[in-house]
Length: 204
Image (cartoon, rainbow, N blue to C red; front, side, top):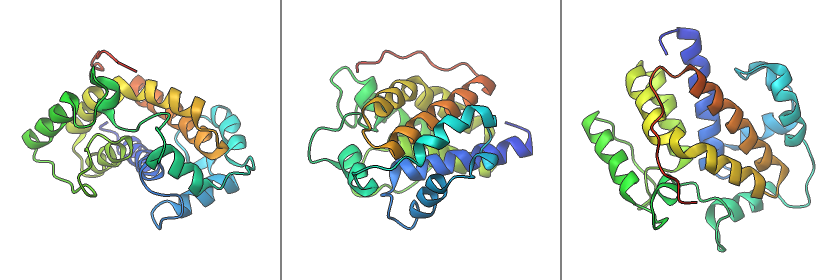
């Protein structure tokens, strides 16, 4: 990720996706992004081919009887079981638990690379939203090697499965489209990654 324009476009897409997966759609971080994606016209700014993005753009603008904030609550908070939990260890741990071995491995990697960020409450660091925002931060600060490692070791091994299940079970057009946009974007990142993606067993 040595090209400056590529780094900037990567950071932009990673930060947008991370915020939309992590923050409530009516929050100050996510609300402008939700408005932009549902209004249309955003595809020219997204670092993927226009013909690839057009079908997704149409889904974003599809009306729904369910409010987008209610969909976010259902998909990320509960109270019922989440159809696609957004934490890596749920997919990578044999017992499908939070704070599993993969979370501990991520923490160790962060310590070794002097990476510190504050989580809300006692929350695992391997939330898809926080990982994507961390990748954006690494790219923005020229830490390309660590960014590639984060993607290859801690994001891409499980994110395709998570995003596929998330899209299929989202139920709301905005989040169905978000899952599909993330799938397309992360597949593009994988194709340009300079190190191989770790092969890990998935348990969901």
